[in-house]
Image (cartoon, rainbow, N blue to C red; front, side):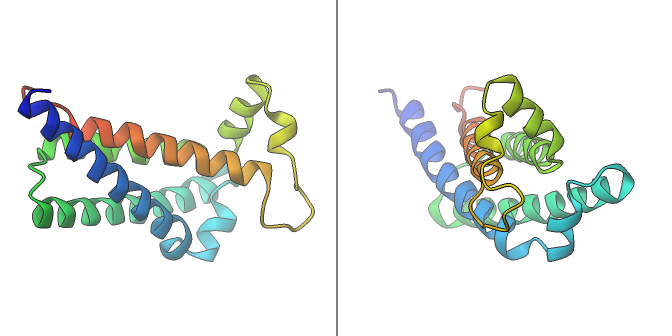
Amino acid sequence: MPHSDQTAAVRFAATTAVFTAAHHVGDYWIQTHDQALAKGRPGREGRRACAAHVATYTLGQAVALAAADRYLGLGIRWRRAAAGLAVSAATHYLADRRAPLEAIAERIGKAEFHDVGRGHGCLGTGAGALDQSWHIGWCAVAAAVVAGPERT
């Protein structure tokens, strides 16, 4: 494996870890209760709450990425970082508006799983599992965008 590919692989591994950790902090510790309740509502209130959540979530990922880059010497190019953070933010917003993720689940045959636990006041729901797996998957895609080879 050429050196630049090894470097990209190291950046990808580190960025994936950083984005995943920052995801959990942003989604569970930084997000306010009001944002969590309102972000899926229709209209301006829902859009505003979701945008506020995604803004703080993305800021957390950016700070974590900058710290990792500085202390680990990852050599991240900031245009790539901005593009990766944009991927993470856009896909996070899409899922957290709830209706789009539910529509995707229905379209691919996951509607029944999506509805597991709905209306029963339980923490573990199909919708929650699909939401989190969506976010983690897109964190990996965003990390690949950030890590890309040095030749671009």
